[in-house]
Each structure stands twice: as structure tokens, then as C-alpha cells.
Amino acid sequence: MSAIAAVDVIRAKRDGAALSEAQIEWIIDAYTRHEVAEEQMSALLMAILLNGMTGAEIAAWTTAMIASGRRMDLSTVGRPTVDKHSTGGVGDKISLPLVPLVAACGAAVPQLSGRGLGHTGGTLDKMESIAGWRATLSPREMADQLSSIGAVICAASEDLAPADRKLYALRDVTGTVESIPMIAASIMSKKIAEGTSALVLDVKVGTGAFMKRADHAAELARTMVALGSREGVRTSALLTDMSTPLGRAVGNAIEVAESVEVLAGGGPADVVELTVALAREMVSLVGLSADPAQVLASGKAMDAWRSMVLAQGGDPDAPLPTPRFREVVVADETGVVTELDALPVGLAAWRLGAGRARKEHAVQAAAGVLCLAKPGDEVRVGQPLFELHTNTPDAFTAALADLSGAIRIDPTGAAFDRPALVLDVITEG
Ligand code: URA
Image (cartoon, rainbow, N blue to C red):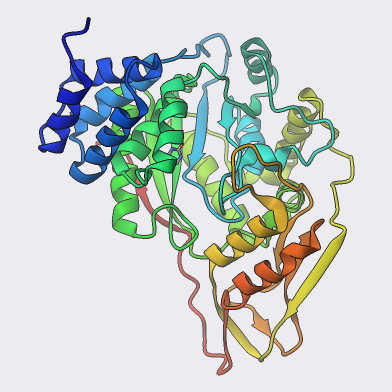
């Protein structure tokens, strides 16, 4: 019998006390072993959401979640390891060009990714649009690919922070996802367990992001940077705008196509800007001297992309899936686009089949929304604004309703100031 009782831990947090390291270690371990009941953990999560946690509690919670599974050892890789994590946004395909770009700069990027849930897409769902591409790699295959190519995008194994998997599912159904300590511990436990030596966080702010407010996003970023540093992972964070979708493509296959355009030296300016900004931060954290903009222009990042896709069974030259049905939304006035709200675009893509409502649902590779006009663009009456793609045409009505207020056109054509994409950089200390 343990000297600690779950009900005492719940009462302590309910009454605003800080939990001890021993209490946290015990409750995470006992919960992972199904010895603490779901209703008890639910009560504790709600008390944490309401009363918060100190830095020491968050660190202990993160360490206990890492210890619930296996911490990977990437010391044999032979290149400096550095990863990126985004808190999720609409049209956020940045990992696809970024991972091969940073590999082509000389680092190894062990990107363990997830699938999308709700209006933000998942990197694995996008990559699975590529014929033959395999998300599951053994630890040996992952380490070999990191040594030879430097780029891996794959699914996290079941034994990576299993406590987080269980807790995340519970938070999802108990209204306790929106706790900064819990989000920070959840993200950082997985990234630290993955074994990377350095990490750049892309913390999104805006309507299409988890964090709608810049001060909350900054607090989350500072909390995660502190957790990384404590665990010996050099960590920094970029706060970036997610009030409008990144690039023009929001979906799966269409985001792969847009990423390949970037690797080929083209693509939308915002996707290129953010890819290069994150790559610069990653390369600098591990002390490499390569200039990511030059490496991108040289075509070496495209070579790394092709090698990475081939190594995981994919055919980089195979045509990407196309939708069976399309609808176009046109402008009903002439002017300058002053707003394109990320959230309704993400919701529309999700309804068209690009995302899932439940974990077990499948996604449509060809579904999504192409944003044909972005903030700052001039449009004329009748000009296409959105192209909707799906294999399930019943979804058009709801998706069109989502998009009805998503775009604002200023008929006076007044000058438009594009907001900055990178809002802030948060580093250790
Ligand atoms: N992503 C995670 O991995 N965990 C959270 O809690 C929120 C977003």
C-alpha cells in the first residue's frame, strides 16, 4: 500500500497547495498503471486547471510523464539533433519543407508527429497523401535514417510518454485541455522523450491557434523553454501569427503540393519566410553555420525531401490524390482583402473531410480549401476567393456556411499593412 492517497493529492490541489515531487511522481505512475481511477484524475486535472501549478510542479509533472515510458537515445546519430514543434494552426505544413531543409544544413531532425484532431491538421495525415509513404518506423530504422539522410517524419511509438496519451484523452473529455501547465508538460514530455538535443517551438497566436491571446502564448512559450532547459534540451520559441492561414493550401495532399513548391524554390512568401526563420533558429541552436535560405535555393533541401520520402516507402514523383468534387466561392465586391480568418477556413477544410472529429476517423487526402486571395491581395467582383475540394459533396453546405464570413474586402482599396509573421522570439534565461 502506498503512503500517498489520490484523494489527499486532489484535496491539496483543490485547496491551492503546491504538490510535492513525490506526490506527482506517485500519481502519474499510479494513473498510468490504472491504479488511480479516471474520476480521481479528472478531479485533479480540474483542480490544476483552476489553481495552476508552480514551475517546480510543472517540471516534476513533465519528468514523471517522461519516466512513464522510454526516453530515446539518439547519441549514435553522428549529427547534432534538433527538432521543431508547432502548437498547431491552419495550413501549417511547415514541417514538410523544414525537416529536409534543416537536414540539408547538416543537422538531424527526429520529427515525431501526430495526426490532426479538429480544425488543425496533422503532419502524418498530410504525409500519408504520398503513395506508399509509411508513418511507422522502428527505433533502429529511425536512427539509421537520421544518420544517413538527417530527416525523419514518423509516428511516435506507443511507449513514448504513455502517461500523456492517457491524460490527453481524459483532458479532451473533461474540459481541461486549456491549462498552460498541462499543455506545456504534455508537449515537452514527448519532445524530451524523443531524445533531441535541441528544440525550436513555434507557438501560434490568433484565431486559428490554441492560444488566441499573445500574453497566453508567451506564457506557454516561456514555460516550455524553461522545461526544455531544465532537462538539458536547448530550447527556444518563436511566437508566430495564426490569425490567417499559412500559405494558400489547407488540407492534406494540397499542403504536400505547396510544400514541394517551396522546396523547388517557389511557394507562398509566408510559408517560405516561416520555414527559413525556424530553420535559422534550429541551425543556430546546434551551432551549425549553414544559411538555410541559401541551402533552400541550392536544391539540397529538395534532395533531402526526396531521400526522406523514398526511405519511408513513398514515391516523391507519384501524382497526389485529387478530389471528385470542387466548388468555387467568388468575390461579391471589388477591393483589397483585409482579413482572412484562419478558424473558419480550418473548420471548412475539416468539414470537407481533411480532418477528423474523432481519433478513429479516417481523413480524405484530397479534401481541403485553397485560399485564392490572401490579406493584401486586390480582388474584383466575380474573382474566385476559395476553391473547396471533397469526395463527399454533402459537406459543401456546411463548409460554405463556415466560409461565408471568413474574408473581409475593403472596397475603398485603402493601403493594407500586413502584420508581422514572427511576433517574438523567446530564449532561455
Ligand atoms: N498538443 C499536445 O501535445 N498537448 C497538449 O496538451 C496540447 C497540444
